[in-house]
Length: 412
Ligand code: AMP
Ligand code: MG
Image 1 (spheres, rainbow, N blue to C red):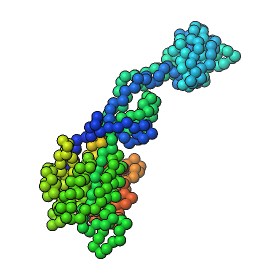
Image 2 (cartoon, protein in one colour):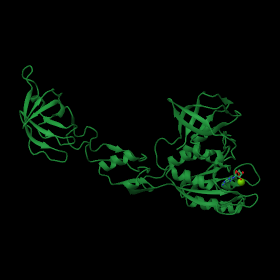
Image 3 (cartoon, helix red, strand yellow):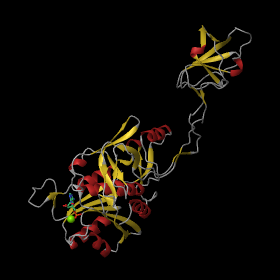
Image 4 (spheres, rainbow, N blue to C red):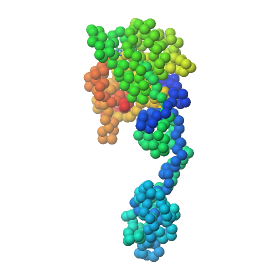
């Protein structure tokens, strides 16, 4: 059994990202949320584009604002009014000021803005009641970003703020990685789909749906290939077909040590290399990770355990990070870990790294983990519903007391 950290590192190491040239497409900004940039974006615009005012006030030459004698405020003559979007027509000369509003373009000659509240107005003159500092309230051209520098790097996952930046930089189309294609198949003679009538001995294939949801949430396309019986020939054909039409395959079931667990053998038959067969984790011990070569590319195959909770925990812990790397993301592949305190006693047999599911809330400055009620069996899918996190008990540790310190994965 491979330790969790080692399995995680091995999987990420085996994963080759999509190709930025061959596996990319152009999308409009309205379709860009969650997509991964395939190339660096450089803007030909400075930010701000030109010197402008950060306040409602008066644009002046700093040298004109110094008081001549004690108690006598400086007075300046107003030249013109510059609202946002207006191109100044006059330059500000000695003894002059331009009325300016927030976002207004700084007129030639001016280098400082005096806020309105620090002036008094009389007709076309203002009196400076509080002298400014040089450069006050001027947003200088290029102060935030200089044209030609890298604005956003390839491998960035785009969110609302990035999309705003791209829009402002006048990039209405962006080159992003195509969505990775992930084939999903469920193995087991006992499985039926949710709409089929259930006969004695049968159960519903819930994994197909849960895995598809997780794959889609990670920004990939799920190719649902349905249920395959525990028959070596049918399974071999289904796996070969899954590999042929995807970038990554997830199967569930059939990777344990039972007489009907054929997946590992078939992967070897198909010329695959088995890198992991079991991980020291609970739930989720039987986990097969293999690579298959197809068209010169190494294709990652995850044979997940059939137990619904084990399958999900394996995806959260191992598959989603690999999928993030596949999708072109260059950082932050791993799950989100935080430290917190359990509000119940957490127990393990100490033999494998143990994951317990529950709900984590941020309360009084710390994360509090609340264990889900009911059985923590890997076959009990029901109490996994409405949880948002996994608490981790390391190997060798048998319990974590109430209020103790526990590492938690926050699920998204
Ligand atoms: P296996 O890993 O094939 O030995 O399956 C372990 C357990 O998970 C068995 O109780 C199966 O019935 C159950 N199981 C396997 N595949 C699925 C599935 N797709 N959906 C729900 N339960 C499953
Ligand atoms: Mg099975």
